[in-house]
Image (cartoon, rainbow, N blue to C red; front, side, top):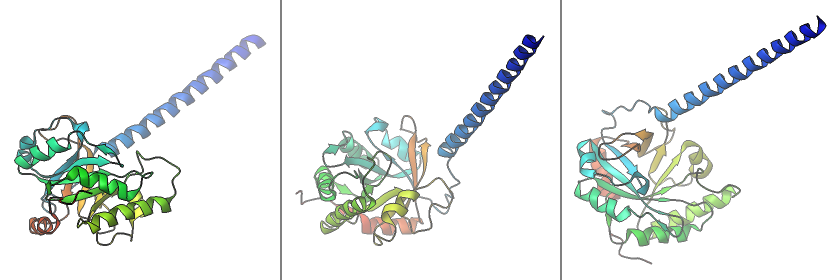
Length: 256
């Protein structure tokens, strides 16, 4: 009888343990599902307040029908041009030409590498742009994600500043892209004269002046296969026209 009681006790303990594992798994799945929902569900964007919409792309988005995107309400596009000191996006030239023919306002962005010299990165971007006109100018994409760890914040900030300063010396005031965390880590109060392109999944993007808001990483745009980043300009159509008139860059004639 004692052996039978021990067996029943062990069975009970095993059942309790299995129930605990199941509950833990369900909680983990619920947390994961909530995170995925947060990342894939865009915040409410008041299109009357922010009527100018656009998207951003790289070669990862494949071949794009920009005319279809324009008919879908897209008015501007940020196109990846470069990364670090040597990488050049293979679709930059094609995307630039096709977007222009579709009537979209174009900007070129550079993915900033924390472990590379800022001036060398600026030169890579400028050489890639060449003599192309850019209605939105250029942007520096500053993200911890995708960058190596172990580099001091001061070194990162110094390299960002050196790239921005070099571009300014060449007549280009770059727009700076980042999320909220990276903004406060690397940019807050450091670039008061530059436009901010903020990535945020909340209805109020950030408690700082911003120009572009990337509010969705998994959006849909006609002419683009799969998911794509969605953006809006942070002002009225009148302010948009004024921004374009001041920001547009008329061809890089000074390749280093």
